[in-house]
Length: 254
Ligand code: OOG
Ligand code: MG
Image 1 (spheres, protein in one colour):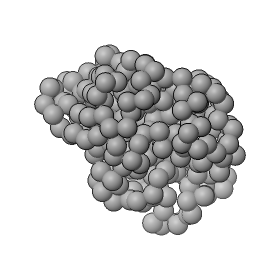
Image 2 (cartoon, rainbow, N blue to C red; image 1 turned 180 degrees about the vertical axis):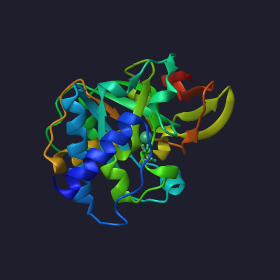
Image 3 (cartoon, protein in one colour; image 1 turned 90 degrees about the vertical axis):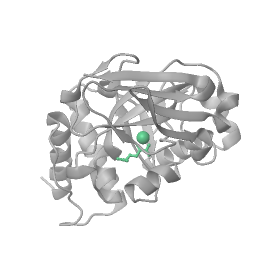
Image 4 (spheres, protein in one colour; image 1 turned 45 degrees about the horizontal axis):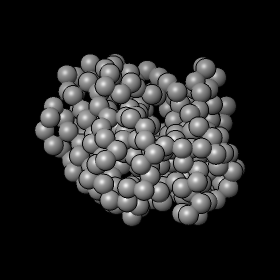
């Protein structure tokens, strides 16, 4: 087994067992391209267990996130069906190590994305949009990582809660974003913080997919990246994200 395959296996096991591990890149550096190779191998393990790819997520599309985690490049990872948590439902914390919630915009695509899109074209690829919460859960101890390590770890993807779908695409530019835990406001922001306009995440998604040589089929999800920093939560917490006119997504940590 190659060294990179061993890292992919270790990351997959850490996610499956919800058990934190140490970082890899300090002891044996790898490039960003190699990190995406490790990510692909680790997702392959999930697919072999029967999980299905349902879309992709972008990370570090806002300053707030870059500052919180100390990195400054846009990254992306895969979403699978096993990561989907029910809106308004209970999220079983046994499945997570040290989860954090962040408010996001989620897109549902209407056409296959087969190449790079312009901002104007991107609207045509949208079926619907929804308020969402991403539950990130780094597999690394203390939630600390280099850019290479987090990419190898599928960009901390762990869970997602998608709220009500609508075709409210025209209003996306500057919606108020509020993340609440037990009714208390913990983060506020604007969708404008997401690359200046969340639709730009769709454009960026088309670019990263093209670079990876991947086609994203119609009916896929794209998580645009958090507009604010993420917040840790614990058992018993009720977590909600409101994205202006799009509405709200929520869950109870159980
Ligand atoms: C990496 C994932 C970043 C976002 O929305 O910016 C991300 C992390 O913060 O652990 O999902
Ligand atoms: Mg995110």
